[in-house]
Image (cartoon, rainbow, N blue to C red):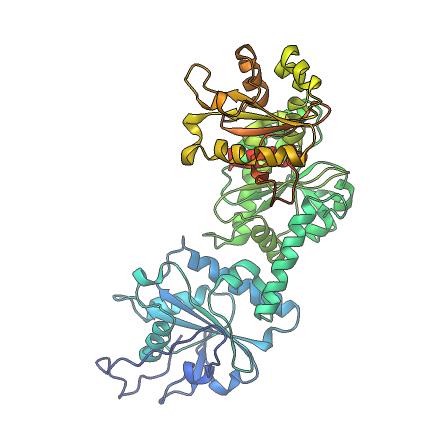
Length: 522
C-alpha cells in the first residue's frame, strides 16, 4: 500500500518521539497528532493515494490503533467488523463523508510491510492511514494510546473520536463494539440517551402497561422459516403467541432448546423461536456465521420451523448489547397477550424444565406463592397454640425461626428482634412473636429468655416442610396476615420498625421468591 519513500533523516536509532497524553473531554489537535515535521499527509488504505492532512478539517475523526499481525480469533477482528458496519450504515444514511477513519498500525517485531498491506486489504472500507514508512509517528500515537506490545494491549484496541471542534468524545472502542452506527455523532450525551432507551426497552419487557412486541424490537415487518425464505409470516401476527429470541453466540444452548421446542410441540404448547445469530465476538465473517447457525439448527426436525430475518448489524448489535450475550447464548421470552416477557428464559428453562412453560420467572413465582399459601397458620401451629393466640386477640403473627448455628454476627437476628419486640407490640396491635427452634435437640437459652410462645416440637417438621419447600433453611422472620396466610419469609429486613417506612406485614412474598430464583439460577 505505502509507496512513499522513507526520508533519509528518519533514522531508526533516532530518539523516541514523545507520547501525547489524551483524555476524554480534552481538546485534541488531531492534525498535529497524525502528522509530523516531515509529513503533512495521510494515505488511503486502498492504493496508497496521498490525502492532505487538511482533509480532516470539519470532520469527525476516528483514530484506531492496531498491533499487527492480528489473530483472526480475537476481539480486534470484532472491532474491525464494527468499523466496517459503522461505515456501511453511515453510507446508507448519506453521512459517511462527515466521518474520517484513520488506522494507525504498529508492526510487531519480525513482521514486515507485507503484513501491513495484508491487514488493510481485508478491510472493506477505504480508510486513511499513517504511511508504513513513518514508523516514528505510528509508534508515537500507539504509545500515546497505551499500545506498545502485544502484552500491554490486553486485547483492547485504542480508539479515539475527535469532534470537528477538536474535543475528544470517546477514548475506547466499545462505543463502536456496543452501539455501532447508532453511536453517531459519538457524544457522551448521545450515548447516555441510548443507554436510557435500552433501560426502557428492558423495563417494557416486564410490563403489561406498555409491552414491547416483536415487530418493534426487531424493526422487521416479516419473518421467514430458517428452512425456506419463501415461508414467511408478518411479525405482528406473533404478538399474542409465546415467542422467544434465541440469541446465538456459540450454539451451546441449541441442543437443549431443540429438545424443549420438541416437548412443547408434543404437549400442544405454543412456542415460536426466532433465531438471531450474533457474530460480534471473535467472529469476523458475519454472513458465513449467520448461515452456519441456520444450517446447524435445520439438522433437527422441529428446529426447521424456527423463524429468522435478514442480518441487520444495527438491530443485531442492539439485541446483543441489550441482553448481555457477550460470552454465551441467551433466550429472551417476549411479552405475549397479558403475560410478561423475561430476560432469564435460558436459565429458567434449564433449571426448571417444562414446569416453567412459557419459561418466565412469573410462572415459578406463581407456583411457589400458591404452594406457600395453600396452608394456614393454624395448620402450622396446631389447635392448642392457635387457641391461646385467639384468646389473646392476636391477629398478626411473626414466626421467628431461630437457628443459632447459622445466625452469624453473634446472634444478630435474635438480638435485633429482642430489642424491637416492644416497638412491634406498640406499632402493630394484636401482634405476637412465636419462637421456633430449628435446633430442637440442642440447649437453647433463648427459648425462655423472652417468654415468647414456643412452637410444639411435634409441629417442627411441618413448619420446615411448608416454609422451606425447596430453599436453604436459615434464621428468618416469617410474617402472617390476619387471614392466617403467609405474607413474607424475610420480614427481618424491615427492622427496626421505628425507622422502616415499610410494614412488617407487607406482602412481599412474590418479590422474595423472585430474588431466590435469581440466586438459584444465576
